[in-house]
Length: 420
Image (cartoon, rainbow, N blue to C red; front, top):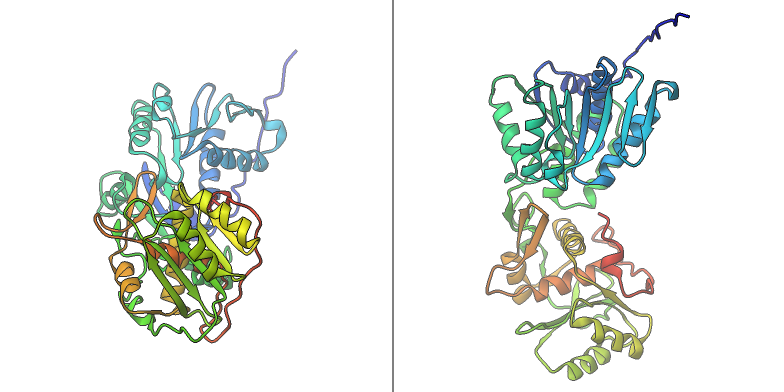
């Protein structure tokens, strides 16, 4: 009995010209710094699948992402694009074994030691700027013997990471390497993104974050997050303390060790109308905050020692008190929200302690994310309080009134929203 060999007719899915030119560059080492949602992931799924379709029994083709959940996204997208009769899959190992015996693996870079030992014939490193340098080293060992081609893709994220440095070497003409940059405008021109959607997203992000996400322009790894590209956003928001107006929302940062308890309130126009800064015993602090806040909405730092204070205030004041737990991701979200309203001049504050803390505040890219803090020996209580009150409001144009959303009813505001 003889069997008829399986014959396939393959047609490459449609890619727009700049996307296809980047992904299917003939260079072995190809670095693609690209806007979010510009098609880099889809393009590289097509590229890796094409390599595997022309592979042979036992050849491995890898997709490596910073964490397991991101690898699984690419795995599911690849399965959706393949006819079901052409492969078998393993949901536990995240593998797709094609009809020709080639195996596509979707792996996490979280533990680099797990990436050693295999021979790989085609490799994609997704969101490379967020992958550990040790993972890059491990991946290089897997394609050394095979000479397999590599695609390193992702948004830019600062400058002090291996992906940014390797991209600069490729851009400078390193042998057998290529560099491509795809911006949001390229994707808009190709009909992949809408101009309105990108501009709406830009308006909600600080300049440096929007520049990285949509223009593929890396920010400095450290600096002031509030001043924007022009460098004077903080001073453009100087105003008087509008004590004659009523607060619509408070933000409170509670003292820890030698810090200050700071309360800042905004009025209906987004101007600071109350500013309190003191160091007192906890019992007195609780009573002072309760008397000042009354029935006005208040967003209060409930991190660490602040948790029992906030619980007492909720018992005293009810549902107008909202707890905010500061973690790495939730503080990043808080500071980026504050940067947006400062850079768009949707807020004003008096020159003095508040503006001094804003000017000295710093961010720094680290391997685990963005770290926001005051320089050693300085305070950031005013910055945190201002960020908290801003988080409790919705801002429109400067001429519009500030909207205060209703209370969310839990003690984990900062933690529950850590998916950024």
